[in-house]
Length: 77
Image 1 (cartoon, rainbow, N blue to C red):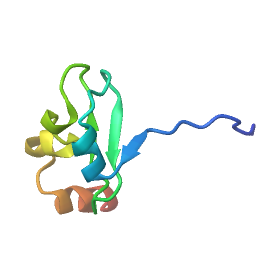
Image 2: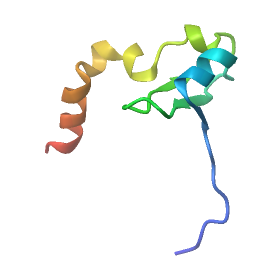
Image 3: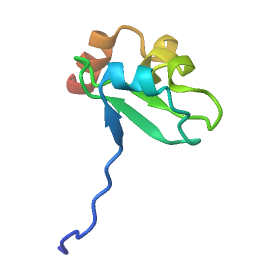
Image 4: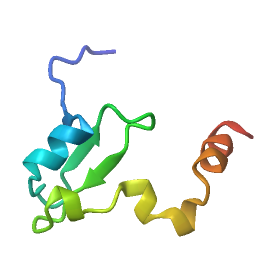
């Protein structure tokens, strides 16, 4: 097996810094809130500022349901 010489780092910052900077993420670009208990993420669309983007899981709440149920489903056969 070969070794990897490259790594990818996604944009990440605290909730306060994201809200203050309020950047527009590129379409498909991932931003991670590192200080929340759930490490919440947002995915950019190229036009919507951070503060107006929904959180990834929150945007799919109807599909995923309760967050703890979602996590339990990942670990339960």
